[in-house]
Image 1 (cartoon, protein in one colour):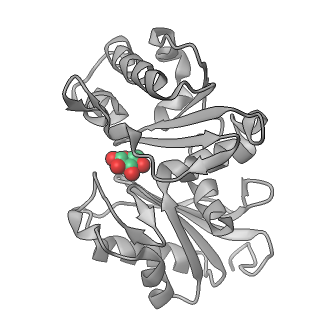
Image 2 (image 1 turned 180 degrees about the horizontal axis):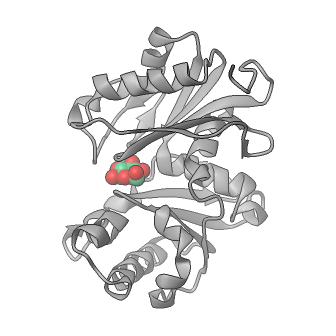
Length: 256
Ligand code: BGC
């Protein structure tokens, strides 16, 4: 028997769609906590819509979910439709994930960019909560994973779909230089990679003058390994919700 009643007022199934894994869990969107264990499936390869939509279906089915669903997707999203998919199959472009969930289940769904989702969770429940409102200033959340995702907040207000992981630095897409996947692929030391992240954050600082940078992604569990190579004027903190930010934030999309 599933642990969570899917029609509970504050319960939303959060699904975090990523280039390596797809994860879901029911979330209490008022408390920002998971209500059951996460369920994870490797992202099918090649990462095309059909097999990945079927994984979304399996996640919904796993929790016997019939209530509301919020999804985070690694691309520009508008009204449920995928506009870009830098690290997945280009066949995703034009697919309306909200409509697809509607077809495969009885769930009402909302979809947002994955970094925007993580940013929402950190602003509401995590490292950004002191700045989530009037006078909070500019907060930039940067997720370092397969790609680089960004979420920009001004006084707690999110500007959706900023895609600042794709600014060019020295003629190259920034995420190709400084994403966590770059460190792995090239077997870079923390120092070498940390300096690339530094260059990226300094460029972001020049453009946006944030008051706070929140750094997310798996590497944010080990900030002591690379924060020492980062020299920016803004306050710099690691995301505090780690793995859960993507799922919790995805669930929050239902409120937007
Ligand atoms: C995508 C963004 C996404 C980021 C993190 C980038 O390649 O363009 O939409 O937020 O990766 O997944």
